[in-house]
Image 1: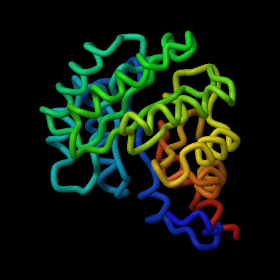
Image 2 (image 1 turned 180 degrees about the horizontal axis):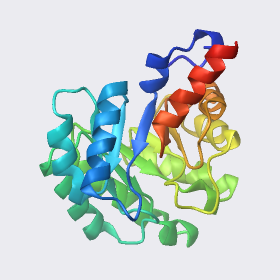
Image 3 (image 1 turned 45 degrees about the vertical axis):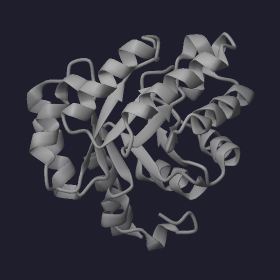
Image 4 (image 1 turned 90 degrees about the horizontal axis):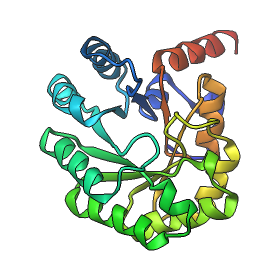
Length: 233
């Protein structure tokens, strides 16, 4: 989506194609995954993100719909280490995921062990050859300087997308996060915004600031909010 678009330019289709549904709640069930898949297909969302265990089920339901299945690796805080992340990534890839979203290692990042951070990403990148690799930074636990460094480490290790948050952190995404990451990576990677996004206006502001995609827990609520805006505009 062009970052020069205004509210008047947006349609329900362009909004839907900029949204990713995060189906990662602790009480997730196969019934809720099925509902999420139906919703994603009906609206034409960009992607549905699920835990590795659920990737085979989601991939089967979404086959042929054009909605990407994203395997969520090392969620929520990336503490599991390289071997575990590679195992989760391999599980997701073998089950039909088209995207991998790995949480950065916050222990390593905040301890200044940047080589370890980059090595983990590079290892998953090698496994996910040909697929979209997203690296989630969990910006709410990082300083601005750390955000910039983490984003550049991710890009140097082969990330296609740098993502702001998992949605499990102490706060959600801010427009400032997207602006900062966009400045850090330029055209080397896309930016995905996530965490605490519940209104259409938030989605618009994040896209306008340079996010290529916005991840949400309830895409139907976003789309319904857009319809309400459209009805009074």
